[in-house]
Structures are given as C-alpha cells and as structure tokens.
Length: 192
Image (cartoon, rainbow, N blue to C red; front, side):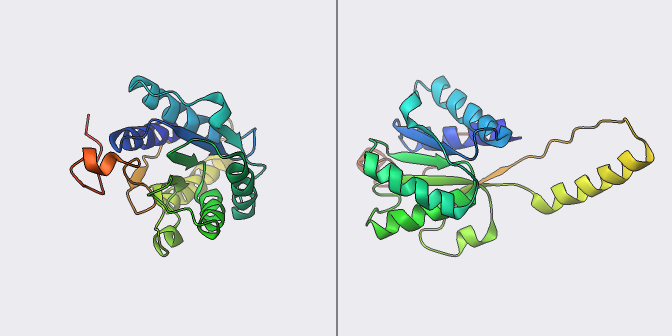
C-alpha cells in the first residue's frame, strides 16, 4: 500500500518537526511514485504542512545513478528544505553519496528517507530511514497468482501488502528541533 507508506513517512517527518519537505520520484509515469507522493502530501496537509510544487522533483529512472544526477541538480538549485523523500532506496543511495561528497550532514543538515527497505540501506552510515516492503512475500504471491491466472484466465485479484517504516540515522529532528524536543535525537510518531 504505497499511499499508506507515504502517509507513514509524512507522519514521521511531521513528528520530527519538519515543515519544509521535498519529494523526488522515479520516472514520470511511475504509479508507485505518484501513490507515495499522494500519501506523503495528504498526511502533511492534514497536519497543516504543504509541499510546494517547486519541491516535487522527477528522476528519469529508479537507479542510484539517477539519484546522484538529481543530487547535483538539487544542490546547485539550493532549495530551502529540511527533509527530502526519495521514491526508492536506490535513488536515495545515489543522492546520499553526492550529499556526503559535498559535506552535507544527514540528518543534521537534511533528513533523507527512501522506500523499499533494501537490506544494504542499514549497512552504511548514516543508515537510510526507509519504508520496507515484504518483497519475498510479494514475489511468492505474484508467482501463485500467475499460476492461478493460467488455470483460470480472466480472474483478477488484488493483494495489498503492508509496509513498515524503518527508523534509522538518515532522518532526524529538523535543525533546531533537538532543543525544542528536549535534546532527543529520535522521535517516534504518535500512533493514531
């Protein structure tokens, strides 16, 4: 459920005090990017936070190379953001590499969040805050559905999978929020 995943990210960033948030999607035609952005935008709006249209970006693909290319353009334009959500982990990895090369501290200068929950996102520092998908279960169900479709053509079934926000080091309180939050470096969004 990509909309719910975006909603979880929006709630997390709002709880951390972020009000200037951007989003970088994959290819323009990507339904996943559109749904993740919709959930993020709707949740932030529910909390009185708007994502400015100028802070919604599109990358040509979902690769780490595209994330790196986007990072160069992003930092040259010097947007006034405290958090950036990228539509998948590969984009986030490429973006973070360039950010680190430019001396950007994450999350102190900019919080970064991805989607997919790729395992190597937790292996480097700062580890990527991300929304994890149950990829193995999704693959298993897809194979079962394929065999069912072969046996019973014309039958359509939709399966929705939950996603889980993995809070790691790449996202933290907005600059200056540490003092307002009693010096805490990690804030768990309230359950609703």
